[in-house]
Length: 229
Image (cartoon, rainbow, N blue to C red; front, side):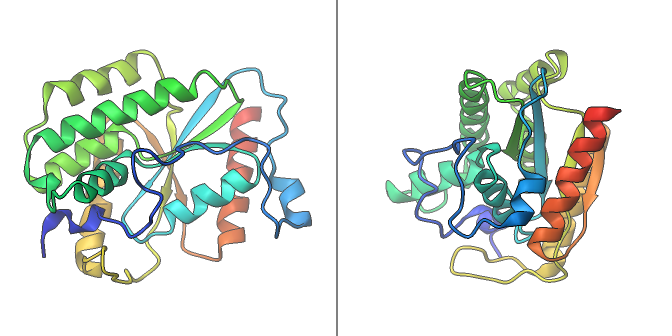
């Protein structure tokens, strides 16, 4: 298996030119009374940027997009956008070059800075530069100066909340045309992310496998606890 096959995706909207953030007040046509309890209240004074991380196939992106329908501001994953854009331009394996990591770092920074102009009270990010550090280690690329500098920046400026939502594996990893990774490899990737975040001093909040509504409720309850702590 090609190590970076785990990062390729089969979503048509993962191109760089696709919208990256979701409007805070958008609602899904299937929204129900459960949404009212989990929708952001808008009464926090300080911006909170929460990271969602985990192994491919854990349901992380599904959670992010559900949070968007509840009115939360969200920023989607940069690595998948880079891959989709490069592949659309004819480069089948952009991850084979170390410059791939630099491109992810640049896009992550660009999206984070752009999201700051909207100033919502709570934002959710699909991965962060810490994930990029884990990815670079996993594929054997040296950590580039751009990534080291970006991690130093987000640490010094306290860009992201120190509490990170770690989306646990579902007990399986369903392959697709784009996601070619065994469940065993996905567990290795998950463990590396866990170690990397802990090494940078982040506190992981486990979101165990379960129905989507339960995972959303767990995340929203954690946010409420953190806001009151």
